[in-house]
Amino acid sequence: MSRDAVVQTILTRRSARRFSSEAVSDEDLSLIIEAGLRAPSSKNSQPWYIAVAKGEVKDQICAWIEENPDRVPTKPGKLLIEEPDARPRDSTFQSVRYIRAAPVLLLLFNRAPFSGGKARMEADIKDGRRVSYENEYVGIGACLENILLAAHALGLGGIAVMDILPAASAIKERFGIGYDLVIGVAIGHAEKTPPPKSADTERFVRYLE
Image 1: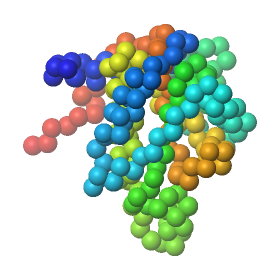
Image 2: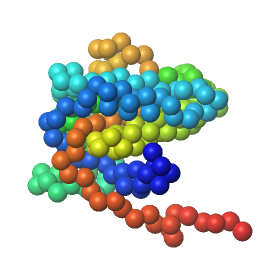
Image 3: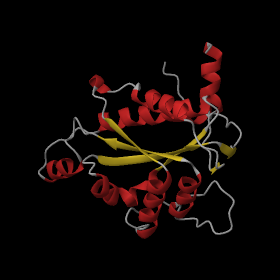
Image 4: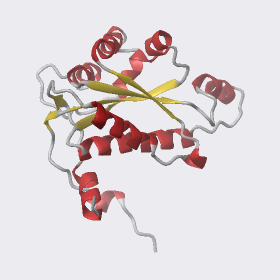
């Protein structure tokens, strides 16, 4: 891939919110996961752990979210979709629709090489000890972005889903995953993708002199 093609992949990537029923090939899925695993991380700690959900497993995760939609509060915000039953203060059920429609759901967990996990982190904070967890989340964010960019480069759509968190406890218990769930990524063939957006360099960039 040329330099310009790489940059264009970055500039044209948008989150997909509507997916067709077409399956994601095993080859493409493997490439997307590998791209995530090749992300940079602090001291090469590789804090991520990825679980792949499809079919009935993915549907069960959706059911767990629907059973506990208020377990993790959502922040008020304007939804980027135009559906008559969209609630302005809660995107959880809309996110479930994206997950159900997409053929693949990737779950990104934090192996917590620095913080020791959420429970340990909360205990240390309570005891007044400094806890380092920022490095872990920066690395997982890089992993997430690599996944989304790889999907876009392969002609697929993807969307990061924080509303996966109401199902975190059930997922950990059912599948015996001892790590903390951070975010989900729905991936599939996009039926509709928003056009590229412009970058607000005036607002978000400053050249220091």
